[in-house]
Image 1 (cartoon, rainbow, N blue to C red):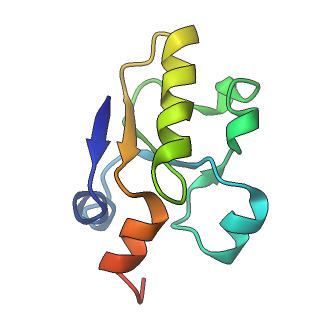
Image 2 (cartoon, rainbow, N blue to C red; image 1 turned 120 degrees about the vertical axis):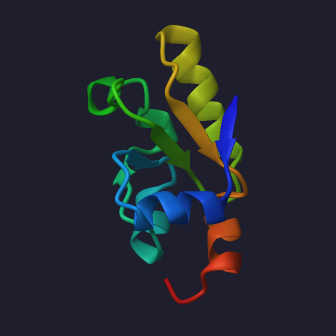
Length: 101
């Protein structure tokens, strides 16, 4: 499974690279803090497959990186995705690096 660190992801965002962020947390978690990712809770990920692009990197994140790993596993089991990337450590790692984002 491909993964990316919070620092590397921030560089990509700052460089305006073409990528999609997907937050697989619950709505209340997304509302409390997010990095502008599209909210698709883990239990909806397969149902909302049409919202996940296949032509650019898709960074999937959650609180610690576990639900995002599950999301990627589920998607790759059912569909031929090769562009999914897990944010290592999730939002907890992001906040440790960039408290004031």
